[in-house]
Image (tube, rainbow, N blue to C red; front, top):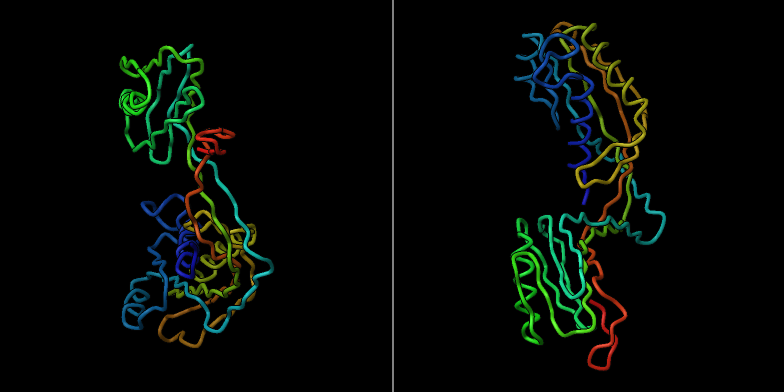
Length: 269
């Protein structure tokens, strides 16, 4: 679920990419260090940084600059799970391959009766085959050889592998204003930093958030503050709005077998 902190972190990441295009291990575009962080700077550390030609860029949510933009009822988006386990059948034999992973389910349908196993990370094909064979033996005979199980004397054997997905339901949506304040030791550093951020952000329609969702990024205004020139403090603020949703994320189980009739009733597995 994305909240205010997720948006601020995403803005810090985006600004860092503007100022350190080759990564933070390489020099900034000004050639001197630039601190980029959430929140408002403390006067003492800020003055010490500026005296050492270290610019600061602070990012924080503007107070009283938010409003509700929820336009519709809950909307759910589904993401399919990733399958790393494989299975193939040959007659009454089932062979597993690949590697198991959390959220994956392996199943064998014997004469229309389902047997399933929910895999764990790192499960081997042989382990999965062994667990399923043990369950099948509670009903009928089953041979096991490594990663292959065989069910003799039955008319139908079907095997499948599925992976649970993710369901993200958006329950609310809001717009919040954010202030990107550049505190610089010179007008040249201020102009260079703010120009770089403004140029990149002008071509950025959406901001990727930590939960995988996206926030709509819009420019709102710019403010310059040159009142503290005697303290070698030159400041410019870029104000942006980000519209983002509040979503609840949960597992979406995948159906392994369907349209079964078991014990006289319809069954889905």
